[in-house]
Image 1 (cartoon, helix red, strand yellow):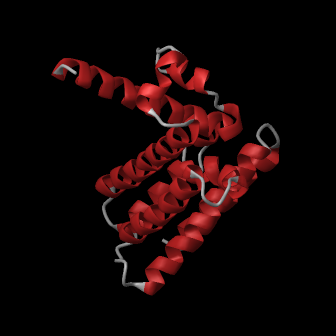
Image 2 (cartoon, rainbow, N blue to C red; image 1 turned 90 degrees about the horizontal axis):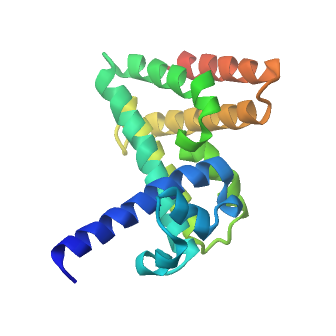
Length: 196
């Protein structure tokens, strides 16, 4: 295979993973068909098996990419903040916002994929990617708080905050359009910010 053909193939593969990552967060695993994944990347479904062994393989990679997006947001918040407490408040405000609630496809993989992962086969690529992604998110949040992996207190605070953030977002999306949805976002922000 020529070098340019390999480069084009790799680019197409990356496009499929990125577009499937968005579809997966928007629709859930059951709502993503191979045809949709390929079409969302501007490709025909006939080329799918040139890039992936199975839909499960694609879903696992797409979920991993979705968690990469989450970690990018945490890193950006850390870079923009003046100190760990400011970073924590900024993260809570950005995460538990009406904009994030409305953008499930571009939003947090923790909130979007948790239920699908809970229903997935324990040996599935999705379950593996979500478990790894949650671990990585907890580590990133621990660092955001100014702690390290050895700091048990910071880690427990990060796990608690992740549970509040994700739970608040999942319930806010489930009740979107009702005043309770905004209340869930506001109360979740207050809880996380109080721990800053």
